[in-house]
Length: 130
Image (cartoon, one colour):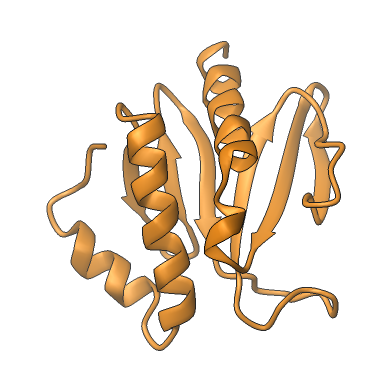
């Protein structure tokens, strides 16, 4: 996985005061690096973006937490050609025809599993097709 020069400092600043979410992100980053090693990462103000040729996914802290979401969670967002038909997808929107943005809250390390990694790979492949 390709990281910018000050990546770790930026990640620590992004998750300042949020150790549970930082631990979740670190697990996500490790598993994503193993599954999709050519991924580039960019820490931005509101999200950590994952790129191949184009942006295909992001991790963020929920700005508007839904009542049913856990107090501590990471929001993983994937762009797909379809809406996710899964109870794990908390919010799904079609910002323009044929592109679906799916938001998946992740509260436990076990949720960073094969299914989530398959969605990330699908999102990468979809972004490559653009």
